[in-house]
Image (cartoon, rainbow, N blue to C red; front, side):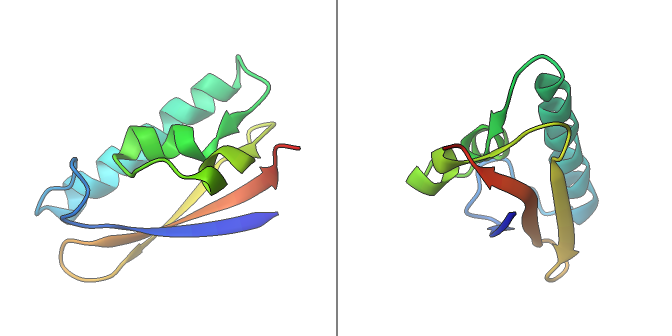
Length: 93
């Protein structure tokens, strides 16, 4: 399984200067992806990037979650910013 990291900071369109609001938003996106996975075979990392406001990547289309394995680990970096570790990803092909 693959882990991919991104920093949720002021360069992301949905970021706010409230870490609590950012954490809640990230958790909402994670829960929405888990709900989508109940009705789909897989959900791509790019689907997560879209929801969070990160740009799409080639790597984001190559790695997916299946079977409710979606897992975001959130690590505070400072007062506002958060490192997101996307875990449980597997290659699509």
